[in-house]
Structures are given as C-alpha cells and as structure tokens.
Image 1: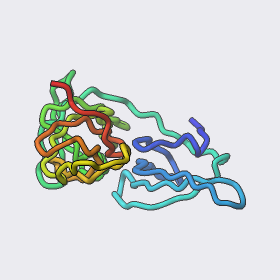
Image 2: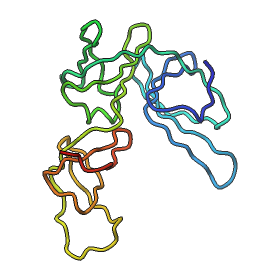
Image 3: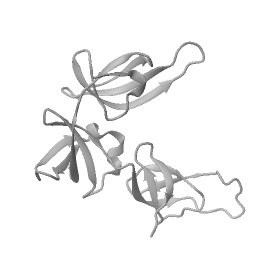
Length: 188
C-alpha cells in the first residue's frame, strides 16, 4: 500500500530498494528555504543493519501489511526479548533493537502488540504510558519560582526524565513511552 512519506511512523514496516525495513525513528525537518523533508532511521529486517533515508514529504513509500498479535512480555535474556502469544500461548524471541528505545519500559507481564510479517516478529508496540518509580532527583527548593521549571529525575529503569519540582524520590509517575516524557503523578 503506497503512503506519503510524511505519514511514516515508528514501528511501521516499509519496503525500500526491494528490502523490508522497520522504522525506528523519524524526524520532520523544515529548512528555512525549500520544502520540508522527513528523515527516517530504519533497520533491515533480514540483516539487522541500520540506515537513514530522507524523503520529501510529498514522496510515496510502500507500507507493508503486518499482522498484529496480542502478546505478553515475559523476560529478557541478554539482547533477546521473550514474548508469549496470548491466543496460542506460543513463546518467541525478538532482538531488543526491534523494539527500539522503548524497550527500557518493558515490564514483566506487560501486554504489548507485536507486528509480524509472514509469521516473523518485526516490531513491538508498547502501551502509550507506563507507571515508573523515580529513584533519585534533586530536592525541592523553597521559594523556587517559575511553575514550568522542571528538574531531571532518574527512573527505576535507568532512564532520565524531566519532572516537575513537586515530584520526589520514591514517587510513582506516569511516563509517555514514545518520547520518555512526564505525564502525571500515578494515582494510588
């Protein structure tokens, strides 16, 4: 199915130069002069090699149809992640690279969407938000002004995220898995 390059999103599988590629990251670039273009970081599904490609936003690319399966994340073994199909209870593995940067948010028992082509797992979509614990951050300063002044905080999974000043170490927060941003304090 042909789609415009500006509709490419991470997790999609596209065909380019007669090869199948999994989209890892996208960046829309709008130079001051000339037309906008999209830069796409993608991984070859057969060899695992990564590359960057640029398209004008009006260009078209071939999007491959994938089968989505409801799965459960079980555990990691080195660079391989193990999942279980919730319908058939079959277990399978896929490389951490196929999940991308959001692999850091995987938690045991988490329900995810795994995309397959011809039965081979090619990418994984996590829930939009997850609840994480803040393990360390700067203390709150009395009299600190500017409500929008965020401070760096370290999450239990080792990632850094910018958090509001009222969040303290030990608090649980909701984090967006696509851009690693603070959403809100976790309830309860």
